[in-house]
Image (cartoon, rainbow, N blue to C red):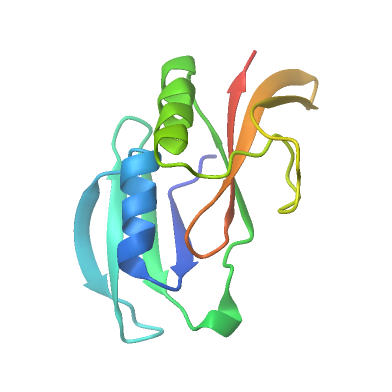
Length: 134
């Protein structure tokens, strides 16, 4: 089993598209009209990992949606995303709490495996975790 696609609710599709394209590296595939909201959303597809992100405009009351996404990436992408985030002056946290004062990269053990990780907030306050196997 694998994840085929994620629907990510966002307050501003343009800002969210910039984040997911320029920070995480998901290129724009196309646009669509969301059946639930009647508003235009965007489809971003990373063909290297065969994952599709659908960014859908939601009302503020429905955000963040989802609350947390963890992307496990290879070493080179981990460092590329970290550099993109640093160059964009994003807040890079080593722990999940939004008010975490410990900045930079941290480590964790998940199901017996050690990972390096860091956290970013997307423009709609979705907590994004970037992790790589140590």
